[in-house]
Image 1 (cartoon, rainbow, N blue to C red):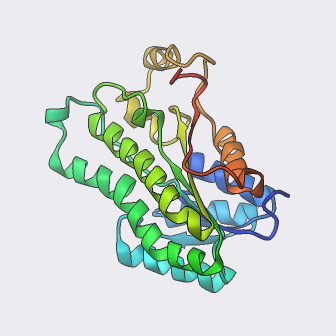
Image 2 (image 1 turned 90 degrees about the horizontal axis):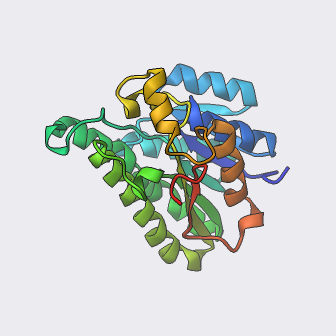
Length: 246
């Protein structure tokens, strides 16, 4: 029960890594808001863990503000924020990615971190405590070809994490990131372009431990970084990648 009595918002909690994080947080005693653009998916995970569901577009300021209000109404404060919602563009040469796809990736992967900070950091400052966890990627550390602008968005998230950590530390707020390698999530097919045994084998060959990141891997790492056990850890971008970035 490492998160007993704490309240948490997890974006993108309707599936994949976000669902794994939400489940782990609930198992460790947290009250969890499952926020997702897919309302049905958010409700399904929330009902499973006795949490609350919220439909949110993390790239829209009004939607993020509404999510924050709903969380404050439900919890009377937010202890933990996990910025997990993310998207990618399909693999392609950098000059061939459309402006629409570029804008969409930066809107969801980067602008969302600004919007959630704007909505939730003031409350954490008032309480003098808080933990923010940004789900970045190994792509921000060791980029793969043909995912250029996705790589850049995750590199932005890692730098934002460190900048936030330095600024917010005097207010008792810790900010960290996790860098997963590709996992069994709805984004996997988008990363690979197509899902075939051959392409999977090529991906797995780049991971020394020989498997993808799982939602459970992410939930365990997220729980530690957001718990009081990690009270001296801030500004860290921790790989959960089976050794891919070594």
